[in-house]
Image (cartoon, rainbow, N blue to C red; front, side):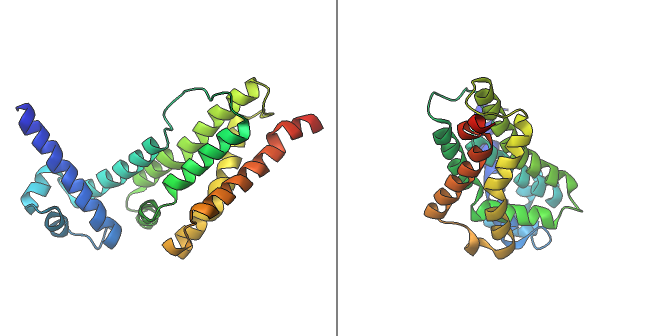
Amino acid sequence: MSSNATARQQRTRQNILTAAERVFLKNGFLGTSMDQVAETAGMSKQTVYAHFKSKEALFREVVISMTGTAAHALHEDTEAAPDGRPVEDVLMEAAINQLNVVLTPRLMQLRRMVIGEIERFPDLGVALFDNGPRKSIERFARLFAHYNDAGRLDVPDPANAAAYFNWILMGAPTNAAMLLGNAALPGTRQRREHAQESVRIFLSAYGPEAMRGS
């Protein structure tokens, strides 16, 4: 197969995924048909089936693609050591970035959809967890371990501390958006205020003041 033909196939596949994402997020798994996906993508149903053998296969690919894209947006796979800025500034930047990436209508719809189909597609719940909370916790754990070794935080168990911080940061706004809908998503000012309070709570337990008081 020529490079041009390969590129065309890749574009077609991506167009199908983009269309399927729109339809699945709007209608859910049961409410979506391959005919709807084909119509939204502007191509024949035979073309859709040539790339994805079933609605189930297409659904899996959409969920995995969306979760992977969100993880990449957070730069969670990088291992670069943090710079010499104050710990509070680094945590604030990481917290706001995470809130901005995760607390979107698109990803909240994805979470609701995956949770609603968890019995039918348990592997997608695992994929959502692995590319979401697990990677965030691992990312924070690496950061906390670095600062603990540098004597700038007192974090004897970075993994546990990362799980606590991730819950403080994500728990309330995510639960509100999941249960109350997109109208409950916080705005820019609310996200910043919540990030500041999350960082303050965390540093009161693990930061320099806590170290001096121990």
